[in-house]
Amino acid sequence: TTTRQGESAADLLWRPHRPAAWGEAWLTLGALVNGRAIYGTADAGGLDELSASLLVGALWRSPNWPVAGSWRARMEAEGRVSAAHRLHVDYQGLLDSSRLEGARKRQVALRLAVSAQDSPWEWALEWSHLAQKASPSVPVFRGGVPFGTVRQPELSIRDVGVRLSRRF
Image (cartoon, rainbow, N blue to C red; front, side, top):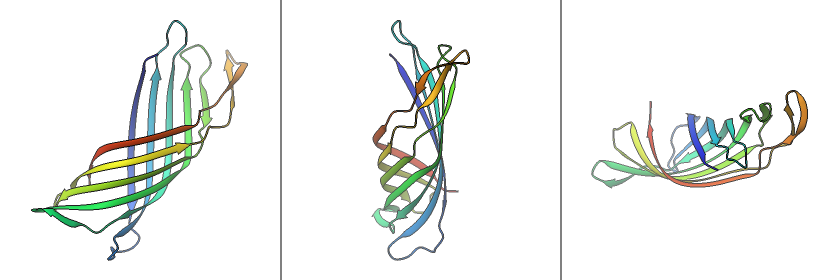
């Protein structure tokens, strides 16, 4: 089959204490939305899946150090866990749509970030690992009649990417 996937994220950060010699500690609140479309074939039906999570966590930022000219760099380490996770699955008419509670997500990330000294923009090289156990099974219906069960499978994603951020 052919699959298309998209992801959107938004984060709010709050620093409860002033920066110290060891860096900064932040509390984080984030939203993560994943959409996946699996196209059907002659042998298998397709589905559309939308996953939405609310994540809470903590972030450590090192002090900045000079790199070249007015450019500065720093390290970051972040850990977060989902406080809520909802999943909607549309079986493209084969079965009635399902809504279920997704399993708890756990995510860790390491970043090397660089920015010009007075710029609100920042580039980062990021490694992250997101893991989630399988969700509990829920009934699936066809025309309102019980047909079987469905659950979200166990998930493990490791990413390396480039991130562009803007401070407000």
